[in-house]
Length: 377
Image (tube, rainbow, N blue to C red; front, side, top):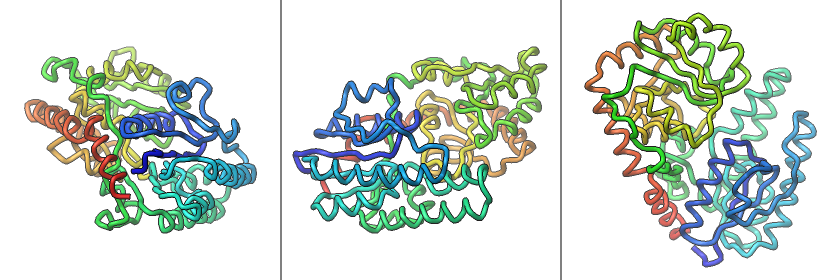
């Protein structure tokens, strides 16, 4: 890596994107100098206090598709102007993999260009757009974004994915010399640790995340109603379906079979995970590798998750967790019952999950991976 460091370029950041970006900046800063070029950074973001940040605009993408497209183009032009003045030799487009114009500009300007997708952005956009416009239009627009992303992959010197399975799901060959399939984020293994020994935990299974439609919350509510006596389902998080969930499960909440924790600060998430024997995570193909799964395993809490993208490289059946092959209420309820019955085996799975995080997803392990990546570009 050049002594001039790395310039990380992102699209407008949501809270989840901000967390992922912060961890990446932490890793890169341990290797050399790093700066961030972004837009619409949350006002309370701590990134401003610790890193050099160049903000293109304070405006987000916008709700209107035409306005979003215009801002998308303007942000790319702004990025080109900023990159022309940056001293860093390496430019890493984190999540902003469809920003073809600045990718091409950076290459033409003699920069080393890396692109690192955070998930399947075109699919995410299509699912969101289908709620606001005809399906055929949403598919066409998402297809256009995918073409831009594919062109960005071709134009970049190297493509970084969280795991090999994530690369494959994005249509990339994880064995290609141009693909670096080991760019997963790290977990703070001191904060996220086993605070409550697994054998001392109650029969609590739970969900941690945003309570909305795409997370399968309505299905999980029905699952919570069918769990055996003595098993508690705990929902941790907030979102559009919180009030619906409270009303739908009012009887179970009154009986103590279901608990709604509401929104909790990230600092308190380790305590929540240490209450559980199992994390239930119906992840979507849009996600690269949910941070919550890594944090859960770090706390010795096995995950029961859908086998999508990078999840398959972390949640290994009967070794570090369990795979949700079917997303029907009946199948999930059956699997949860079977998993909890084998309590002795579950404790072994818990220990393996913690060991996996310590060995492959600690800060030092992530630092070593990125050091190796930057040494070869």
